[in-house]
Length: 324
Image (cartoon, rainbow, N blue to C red; front, side):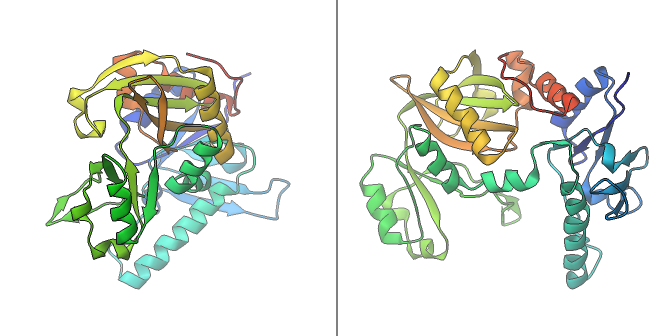
């Protein structure tokens, strides 16, 4: 008997990574409804009813081409959704309308009882705090580079003096423009002389540089683990993707177990980890991106990442641990 329960794919209009997963779902004849919260209006309507049926929430979500019974959703792939900003409205009205969408549409989806979330946005948000990540990584026995989070300029200067090289990292990426030009927050070296009193405005993250020879990007999907060694010679390999080379590797059992346990701690089904590898071959924790990009790695490595996502979403439940 064919399972007609749909998978919801919630993402922005142009998302090639989501396209890859949807292609795999189509190959498996899994019904898919894709939408973006910013489509709310004629292109996206939701009607949710509570207290009038045995199901905790009943109702429908409609797009121009699909009507979804909310009680029958199989799984939700929460990729890169964009919430509406209602720029055509006055500021107060725009803020009001945007809040109603987040708490109305978002709250209705969060109320669904049964579907697998990859990942639930509230769990993504909780896992996205770098200080929380650093704490759990250390508790799991992973090597964590000496790190200081402070808004005290004197503390920052003393930390930088105490280490050979120190990086500054953003605690949270946000859209940022300077002189109408988009600016990306790379992990960059910082010196003591660069620290001024403006540090007091907000906490900053300073981290001792790992004497690394390579990086690892580790994607976990359910219990499937995909590990790729990235050779670049750069402090932050994201600066130039054309200069990167990739090699599929197997993780030491202890490291793999720790990363799986980290996901479990945060209640995540999937996540992308960045690990530095030093000259002795030892791994050092850098960070977890609960909803990290992975699509660019599939073709050069041959790893079946999109297949793993599609299978997880098709099943609608987490599956037993397996390797590539």
